[in-house]
Image (cartoon, rainbow, N blue to C red; front, side, top):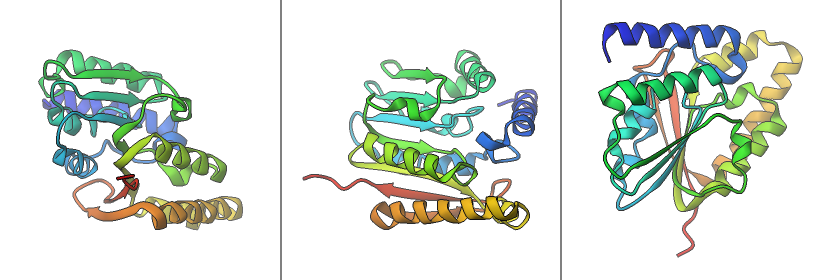
Length: 219
């Protein structure tokens, strides 16, 4: 990405952050190191795969996903923000890093992730929405859906930004603190069943954890 493209990317992200922190949760686009961490298990793929990216934003994770895809693979990108998904489409049209290999299918889905119920199942889900920003019932619904949409043996990765949640908890008031405690209990209940690994990525603003869950294989 050129310096001009990078500046445009950052400016758009910050504008959206200021107007829609509820759905974004980070102050700058994710670094390539965090993007690589999110796609780490996808990088080990064997054979044809179906991939879901949730919260594609300006494409920081997408940029790391695209080179890993081969003919026959499918990538569905879900982004609720209309401006961000329009920007992401333009990146696929204009930037070499977003050029798909022949035979790769990519779909842009401008929707709430909960609208995926009853659609495809996936080998890998790369998820970067700020779960702790959401109401507990929404967190329960989203995570249940993500596990449902995973194929047996599939891997779900999600990002949690360090320090931001703590800051919000300290200054958010009693209602916010109660909701965040409930969210941690919900996330923890899923992690107890599915988590296989976690990594801390320092080279990001702010630093972030990447968690990996795997749906049990039926074989």
